[in-house]
Picture 1: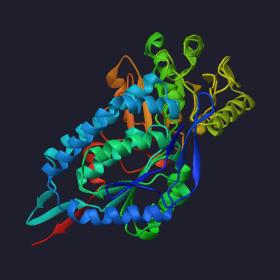
Picture 2 (picture 1 turned 60 degrees about the vertical axis):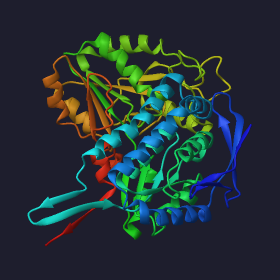
Picture 3 (picture 1 turned 90 degrees about the vertical axis):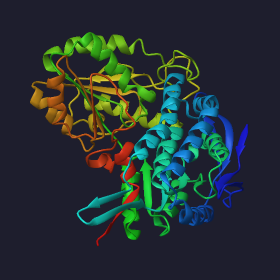
Length: 471
C-alpha cells in the first residue's frame, strides 16, 4: 500500500500542514491501495505565496524561455509515460485502451502550446497605439478525476506559455497519479514557485484558491454545479474564470447515413472512458422511420462491448470510479425504467463475475423522449438514450433542447449537409463523421457547459490581459 504524504510547493516536496487523510480505493475490487494526507488552507496559502513571488520574475520571461520550459516538461512527463498509464488504470479504473490514448494526448499539450506561442504576437499595434498581452497572474487550476493527468498538463502548458505561475488542486481521488506527475514536473527543473501542487478537498483547497485575492484566475474542469459555485465566489475578487463543465452531447444520425457503420461507432462512442466523459455522445438522435433498424444494430453492438478489468487489452468499459458514482448511474437506470423508456440492453445490477467492483452493464434505452431525465441530465456512466426524430429541423431542435452545449456529433454521407446542420447546433465543438481531436482548436461549452475556451491560441488568450498603451 502506498502513502502520499507530500505536496509540492516552491520547488520542494513538503509535508502538508493538513492532517486529514483519505483512503485511495481500487474501483475494480474496492480494495484499499493507498492513503493520502490532504492539504489544507495553510498549505494552499503557502503555495499561492510561492506562485506570487515566482510570478514577479516569470512574467517577464521570453517566449524562447517558455518554450524551453515546455520542452522540459514534455520530456519529463514522457519519461514517466508507462508509470502514468499503470497508475491511472489501478487508481481510476480507466480501461487500458482509453488510458493509453489519454496519455498520448497528455504529451501533445506541450507541443500544441509551443506551436501556439512560437509566432504569437504578445505585442500588437493598432493605429498609433500598442496593445500588450501580459500574463494574468497566479492561476488556480482545479481538475477532475476522470482524466487527471491530461487535464493538469493541458492547463499547466497553457499557463506556462502565457507566463503565468500556477497552484494546482488535482482531485483528491487521483493522489497516486498526482504523485507521479509531481515528480515528473520536479524533474523538469523549472525555477521554484512556477508550479505548485496542493491536493486536498474542494471545499478546503478549492475554496481558498477561489477566495484568495492573490489568485488572479481559476481554470476549472468538473461538474456544472461546482462550476457555478466557483463563478459565484470568484466574482468577489473579480477573478477571471475558465469553466469547462458538464455535457449531454447529441449524436445526430441523418437519414442518408450508413447505419451499419455509424450506429456501432455511436454506441462505442457513448461508452468512451467507461461513459465518464463530459463529451460522450449519450443522446443518439435517429430518423423515426429507421429506428427499428437502429435498435437492432445498437443491441447487437452492445452485446459485443467488453466490460472487464481495466488492465485487460480487450476491455471497453471498466468500473465506475467509486461506489458513489456506481450508485448514481444505477439510480439513473432505474429512473429510465420508471420514466417508461424501452430498455434495449443492459439494465440494473452488475455484470456477472464482476460483483466486487463498481461495474455497470452497458445500457441502452430506446424510444426515449428528450423531456425524460435520462435525456436531460448528465449521468456520467455507460448509458445511451436513443431518441427518434421526424425531420431534420426537429433533430436540430431536440439537439439544442438541453441546458448543455459542450459537444455534438453528426453522421451523414453528405459532408456539406452535415456542415449545414453543424452550423445550427449550440455546442462548442461539433464532430462530423466520427470522433476527432485537435489540440489547436478551441474547446469549451455553450450555455451551462461552461465559460471560455481552452486549447491553442483561444486557450492562451484566456490567460492574458490586454493592456492598451496610447501615445
